[in-house]
Image (cartoon, rainbow, N blue to C red):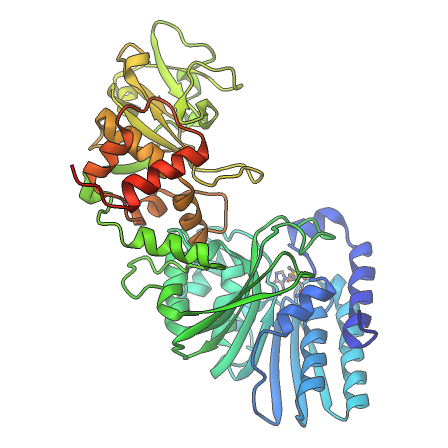
Length: 500
Ligand SMILES: C[S@@+](CC[C@H](N)C(=O)[O-])C[C@H]1O[C@@H](n2cnc3c(N)ncnc32)[C@H](O)[C@@H]1O
C-alpha cells in the first residue's frame, strides 16, 4: 500500500461509504472502486504524449479514479498540466469529491505539475447528450466506473441517447457510449463494467456501434467474480478495458488475475480472435488461456449451424405469472406436464417433481393449446444458471415415452430445442444434450459470456457437429455419463471425425 495520493483518496472513499445510506447506495449504484482496483484501472491506458492532459471522470463518486490516474500521470510522465473534469449527480457526494480533488491538486504541487480538478455537479447523460451545456469532446482520457441500472424503454435518457445514435437499455453502457463521444480522435477510454455487453441480443446495437468507434487495446478479467468490490456488496462479473477512439489494432492484450489483488497473467491475441469480422452479432470473445483458445478453435472448425441441422431453439412458451389460472400444483388428468428448470437433473427431466412450482398446465380454452408442444423429444437448456453452479450450460432431454406421449408445456426460463415446433428424433436429441453438456462447449461459451444467462441467440450462434456425428453421440444414451466419460466420448466422436 502506498501512502501517497491514492491511499489518501482511499480513506476518503472508506469514510464516504460509511456515511452512505444503504438503500440509496444500491438505488444509485454507488459502489466505489477500492484502492487496488483503482490502481489496476488507472494502469491500463497508454499515457498520452501531450503536455496538457485532459481527463474526464463521469460518475466520479468520491473521486478515487481521478486520484489514481493523477497519481500515475504525475509518477510516470513529465507533463505540464493535468486537467480533470469529475462529474457527480449526487449532491451528498460532492464534499468527498471536492476533498479528493483538493488532494490531487496538492499532490500536483509536490510533483511540480499543475493539476486542476473541476468538480461538476450534474447528470452525465444530460450533459453529454446536449440537454445541458456539455463538457466537451476533446478529452485525452476518460476513466470510469459507471453506475449500473436499467433505463426504461420510454425515458428521456433513452431518447437523448438515441438522438446521439446510441441504443442501450443500461446506464453503464450509456456512460461508456457518452465516454466515447467525449474523446478526441486517438483518445482512450478506460472503464470497469459488467461483462454483459460482450454478447447477447440486449446489447447488440450498443456493441456494434462501440466496436465501430473504438479499438480495444487491453482487456482485464477477474477470475473471481465477487472479490473486486468485496467491501461494497457487488456480485457482478466485471471486466476492465482500455480502448482507443478511431483505432484499428491488429492485436489486443488480455490480462487476468484472480481478483484485483492477484498476480497478472498476460497474453496477446489477434484482434480477429477477440471479435470475428465474420460474426454477424459481433460477440466479444475473451480467451484467457490456451484451453480457451483450443475450445474456440475446436468449435469454430465444426461444420454445422443449428439451422443447418434443421433445429431451432426458442424460449419456453409458458410465462407462469401470466397463466396463473392454468397452473396446477400437482398434475391432474385434465392437465399436461409443465416443465421448469428445476425439473432438469443429470441430463433428464424428472417430472413430476417437488420443486415448489406448479407441475401441471390445464387447458382452459382453445387458445391455451398454443403454448403446448406436441409429444416428442426436446432438448432443454436452462436460461439462467445459479452463480455457484459449475456449468453455465445445463441441458436435459424430455423423453415422451416416459410420459404417455402427451403434449407438454415448457416454462419461459427454459430454452427449448425443437424441429419446427415438433420433437427431434431420439438420437439427435440425446446427441445434442451430450454435446451441450460437454466441457468444451462450456469453455467456449465462457469465452463470450460473462454472465449466468444463456440466451437462445447464444445457442444459435455456436457451431455444431454434423447430424450424423450427433446421432452417433446420442445412440444408446438415456442418461448422461459422468463428466469425464462424457468429455471422452464427445472428444472421440465429434472432435476426431468418424467414418461409418
Ligand atoms: C459505481 S459508482 C462509481 C463511483 C466512482 N467512479 C468510483 O469508481 O468509486 C457510480 C457513481 O455515478 C454516480 N451517478 C449515477 N448516475 C449518474 C448520472 N446520471 N450522472 C452523474 N453521476 C451519476 C453515482 O452517484 C455514483 O457515485
